[in-house]
Amino acid sequence: MADRDTTKAPTAGALALADVEPVPGVPKPDPILVVDKVKRSFGGLTAVNVDHLELQRGAITSLIGPNGAGKTTFFNLMTGFDRPDTGTWHFDGHDLANVSAYKVARYGMVRTFQLTKALTRLSVMENMKLGATGQRGERILASLIPGIWKAQEAEIEERAEELLVRFKMDHMRDELGGELSGGQRKLLEMARALMVEPSMVMLDEPMAGVNPALTQSLLEHVKDLPSFDMTVLFVEHDMDVVMDISDWVVVMAQGRIIAEGPPAAVAANEEVIDAYIGKGHGDESRFTPTPLAGAPVSAAVEEVAPPSADEGAEDLADGGADLDGPAEGAGPADEQPGGRA
Ligand SMILES: Nc1ncnc2c1ncn2[C@@H]1O[C@H](COP(=O)(O)OP(=O)(O)OP(=O)(O)O)[C@@H](O)[C@H]1O
Ligand SMILES: [Mg+2]
Image 1 (tube, rainbow, N blue to C red):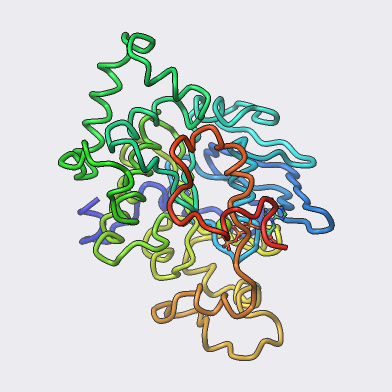
Image 2: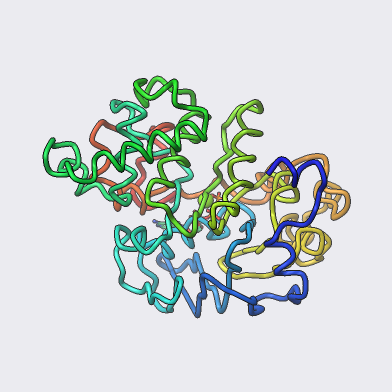
């Protein structure tokens, strides 16, 4: 990880993708996730309409797109927190259509939420142990009752401890989730997702609302995941972060994949610039293809699209896990069941 930053040597993921043509739907040399004709509508709105998408194993792929593009809905669909109208997808050879979120996690694909789901009245260590249940509320009580998990308990605790050390949170093991800062909860959520030893981690805006000091640390942990044989799909609005971290970038707009390719190629893509700026919107200087330093895309995006839908589907699917009340950031905006009106 440190090597990569100082030498800027290409990552294994970037090398594997070096000869892949930057066109939407292009096959990858060794795809871990293959998506076909996945469509999800809410009333008259097509939130996700992915014709074909492959994600390269071992790479860090960023999924970017304006607010409301369908990124979170796509995560919900892939991980069994929502069902598409049509379509199929295969993860590591498993057909995941109609597979529950719990089983998807068992197959090795886990996700984090745009709104953190750390349980505020449980300790950091307890939160970690719950991660071992595979992201599902219904097993939580069982896992907390002494005896039921005796055989696995030691193993789970050891893995939790290992991850807390890796994430430099071991000194906080007895603190309550509710006592952590927003950034620390994001770290905890990522660490917890790793409890099931996933082969793919899907991170939905893990940096959002995190203070700059912790952002760097979160980023380093994400960059580090491929060295643990993990594939990463990463939603992020800050283009500096996207450019820094990604082996490959997939761009979604109005539910469709409109572009994909290495970060620099995507940043220079006219269609991508249009999707962010909006045709005829005027001020194109706000998203300049090169260099990408400067205002994060989110700053430009906020002007062309209303704020995102809430995590309605997640709250439904995750309802059993909220033993101790709403997740971080929960408030009126989090409680609209069907996204914004
Ligand atoms: N449960 C729902 N009911 C109705 N509409 C929804 C629902 N969930 C999402 N939508 C709509 O689907 C579209 C895609 O939303 P989604 O949250 O997936 O976008 P996003 O790309 O994650 O946006 P952001 O970057 O703001 O998080 C939006 O128009 C949103 O309003
Ligand atoms: Mg989202």
